Image 1 (tube, rainbow, N blue to C red):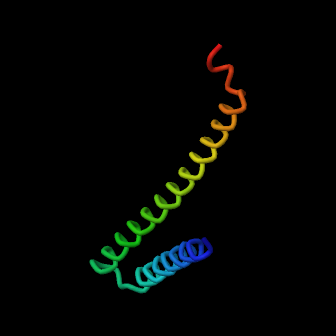
Image 2 (image 1 turned 180 degrees about the horizontal axis):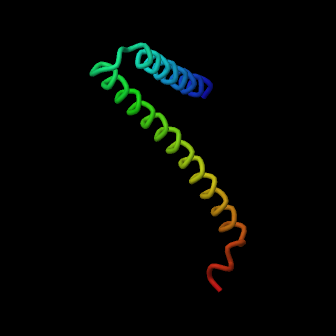
Length: 83
């Protein structure tokens, strides 16, 4: 379990470091085709990173709501659905 969390943190740190290096390369590049291509890659990496974070949050939210629904169901607290 600990190694799973540790590997996720390493992945997150590596992704963030790679994105930082890409942004540094965009800033250092001369205006032109090279800079445009680097900027497109940086924007794509940012979108993928944001989507990954959003999906993780949605997954956590889904399981929290599922747990609450099951607790209500098994405790009889969901009687209002069937009256």
